[in-house]
Amino acid sequence: MKYEPHEYQSYATQYIEEHPVSAIFLDMGLGKTVLTLTAINNLIYDEFAVNKVLVVAPLRVARDTWPAEIRKWDHLRNLTYTVAVGTEAERKAALWQNADVTIINRENIPWLIEQSGVHFHWDMLVIDELSSFKSWKAKRFKSLRTVRPFIKRIVGLTGTPSSNGLMDLFSEFRLLDKGERLGKYITGYRDNYFRPVGYGPYAHSYILLPGAEQRIYDKISDITISMKSSDYLHLPDLVLNNVEVSMSKDERELYDTLAKEMVVSLQGTEIDAMNAAVLSGKLAQMANGAIYDENKDIIHIHDRKLDALEDLIEAANGKPVLIAYWFKHDLARIKERFPVRELKSSQDIQDWNAGYIPIAVIHPASAGHGLNLQSGGSTLIWFGLTWSLELYQQTNARLYRQGQTETVVIHHIITKGTVDEDIQQALESKNTTQTALINAVKKVIR
Image (cartoon, rainbow, N blue to C red; front, side, top):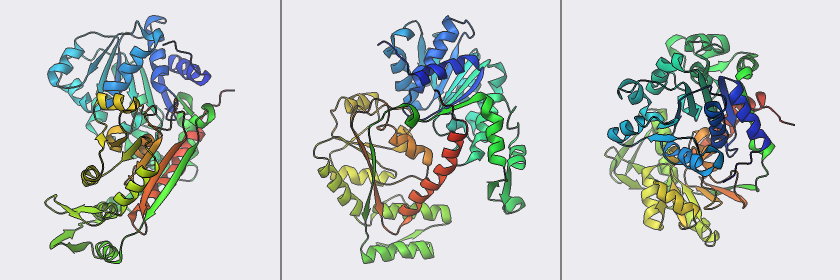
């Protein structure tokens, strides 16, 4: 297929070529994969600036999306690639192919660097979903940091750079510029831009110092571009719809007891929440209609959300429906009620996009990044929400993205008066910082 880039894509490609270190914050659906591959192709074959490129991505994106994009476009026909996923033997075989581009999933980065026995010979690194390197304690971050001095060019791609606040940016930019802009140590970054809530070992969170937000943006602006899809794409309408359900009086009493006492007896089994984090998860389970006991057995609470889901599927009148679930017992109960198919393999994704799957289910953690599902349908139902703004936005963007031709409808099934409402409010409040960051470094092409 002939590649005819949008003006913003040409701009981003040129930016990557002109900046040895670049952070490309592109909103979902703007085609960051193909514009990055175009830059890679130019840097290898036109400018002779790099020899070998390592692409690090989420597993399914590494396995499916990047190879599919290379095969899709005519101008990339000379670009050779290999995909280092699967068993250790399969990964090693891929690494010895000496391709222009080596694509690997992020979980295998420590193995690649520390255990594979392959000399790190890549002089350009592309991190797809830079936000997955937001933890400076993670092994994948530490492993990449050890080889960072050998990398001449690095690109960080993401649409959600700070889904949990600006603290996320430290590790991301520590990898990109080796600490030049935001510092080499997390303690220094905190001291310069944040104030702890609490003292000493009791500090449990940090808030920005006055003026710190703008100072951070100023520090990273020379290597960062950000673009929102609403500025460049004429997407179809997006409809967000909350479908509220209510517990019965008895069900509500059980929920309230657990919320207040952190313990409740269900069907002769005591459900105990040891701390606030565990309590939040158990309350979310109850809001969805079931809960795990200490042996991981499922205790049924109600079917309110399943009933609402049935109504929504019926209202779709035969149009394909994609269901996002969070807990495993959600999936089990959905499967009991409806003839669904999980989107797990490459074939599943192809069949969905071909229109062969009327009801599909997907977990945000495995499908939040990079998958193109817009050809298969335009209706997404959140059976249970996630606290992660990043996974929420990315999952929505599997349907609401470039190439979608129909109005996208996203339903949230919310149990009234429960933690569901708190999660939704948290997602909205976190988006304030996310939007501020995006807007602060946004480049408008005129």
